[in-house]
Amino acid sequence: MTGPVPASPTEDADFVDVAILGGGLAGLTLALQLRQRDPSLAVTVLERRAHPVREAAHKVGESTVEIGAHYFADVLGLREHLETEQVRKYGLRYFFTDREYDVQDCSEMGVSKLLPTPSWQLDRGRFENFLGDRAREMGVDFRDQAVVRTLDLSDTDAPHTVAFDHAGDRRVLKARWVVDASGRAGLIKRKLGLAMANDHDCNAVWWRIDGQSDLDQWSDDPRWRERFAPARRVNSTNHMCGPGYWFWLIPLASGSHSLGIVCDAKMHPLETMNTFEKAMDWLRTHQPRVHEALDKPEYTLQDFLFLRHFSHGCKQVYSRHRWALTGEAGLFLDPFYSPGSDFIAISNTYVCELIGKDRAGDAIAPYAEIYQQLYFSFYENTLTLYQDQYPIFGHPQVMPIKVLWDYVYYWSLLAPLFFSRRQADLSILARLKPAFAEGRALNLAMQALLREWGTRDATPDLRQARAYDQYQVEWCREMNGGLTDELDDAAYLARTQRSIAGMRQLASEVLALARAAIPGIGDHGLDTLLAEHDSRAHAPMLPADWFAPAAEAAEPSTRLGPRLSREAAAV
Image (cartoon, rainbow, N blue to C red):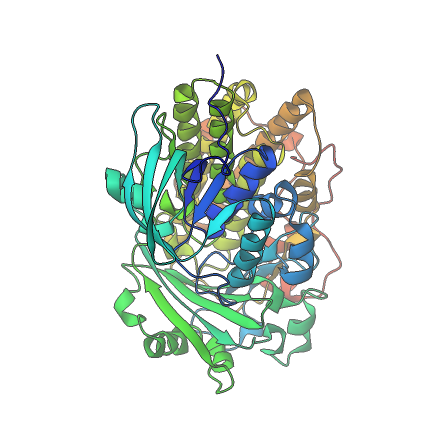
């Protein structure tokens, strides 16, 4: 069977292989990925806004983590731009400072040095301008100020039809494939009634200012300034955490600072922060040191926006009738661990796989269904990291454990799958199914355990000044660095099994700690899941210094926590 004849824009200007509705981060990166895979593809991107956009554009999604960063840098080949025009970040950093002015007296979690696998802060305006220019250089027909007016989706082999206004004229585009990357406008989602709510009820407000606040100057205490040296705190994606909320500070390469409050809707109503004045008043109460640092006349307000119930699912994202949704047009989780770019990378890759199979003449219906099941499973499993967990976000002992666990879960399963280019390898995925099922069960039990621990210990001591340095945990460096390893199938599967063993070990250690802290706490199924695990046969995972008595932990220490060989580490 032969595939469809490739479109030739010079022969038929009204017909293209792929029409992408939306020229933001998801749409432009998809266009680049499609053209890289098949330079003969005729791809048109329709974007409502004029290009170039201003720098520090008013969009969320400025922080990347490993999957998204790898997608931009290595899959799309944009590393030079990221290294020279964006901010290399010192990871995600967490402060447990609710209602505390003296930040040096509170606990902090982050890295003192860069982990091996890089990530960046994105000035979205600068990045999308670059993506638009790159897309045009690669032969993408990128039309800005193009407003879609009607969309007729075909359920036969006939092309889809998109009518849009551009340069003062009504134009019509015929396309074999239509991909909705229009963000929350959700053109296909609204047309087909695909919107689906979830139970993660959180809101967000965010704004940007001219200039950046240097977090290292928030205290004169030399121990504060040195405890994560040589890292510069300002270059992290900083999270100021408290019960039911977190506040972000993200530096942008254009010199602006991106700021935002994300909160549980029941614990912190949106109406208490839905203007700039209200948001600053809210900060004065909940993060007084942050408020003082930002309440300066030189920090001119650039913009302000809020969003109610930002997290959402979708009933369908890939269709056998040659349409798809990607980015926020499909689903969105939560910005706490910056997964937005990750899910753009994963979804765009599945869309490319489907279009490639269609071009090769393969029946795409079964693949559309399988890829969608996989994508939804990644979404549903990742959602468990956030849903119902906001009440414990301010706990200075439980949250560092949760963050460590959540990283292990991510570095063990989802991140290696994408880095190794196996996310669409159905043969490998079938062999990985037991490991993913066990990882999911362990994670569900751990999230419940941590939630009970954090909510039962409702008034923890915030003034312990612990420094939770992930860089000094050797297996963290090993797992993070191992993401870029090139492994054959046997070695990849063996590493996955070691990762699951590491998850079991970490779960057993956390359960023991929780029982010591809260006598009578439930095991949430962990006793059964760990029944055959011998913790004595595995190197310890939790750094001993993190859980020493407060007085001992406050003393300067040269200990690095457990140091594991690469063979013994759970990677």
